[in-house]
Length: 126
Image 1 (spheres, rainbow, N blue to C red):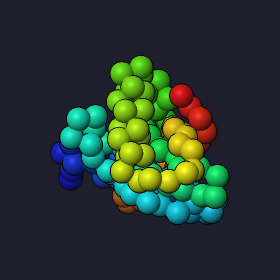
Image 2 (image 1 turned 135 degrees about the vertical axis):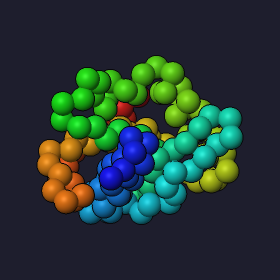
Image 3 (image 1 turned 120 degrees about the vertical axis):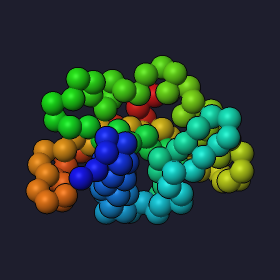
């Protein structure tokens, strides 16, 4: 049995793994996962394709959650993500334009620790 924090971490990682696989299936290369900026926080997934560098904020929720994944990306989170993305871009030195996406992952079923997800992927979310 997992504690609340352990389960939350397990669900979050499973949701991020799901989104990373989705991005790969769309032709993206995953550059970094869980990249941390000491000042602004974490970028869940940084991926690139021929068109852009996508900074993806992943929010995984139960289907009956009080706050949806999209709603959880409030103004403060948006600003921290923008700042962290800018910090990453300064280090990357690429000519590809940045884009910030939100991946809302909803658990639709869980059997023996295996999750089934539904994805609402929003490009240029903010």
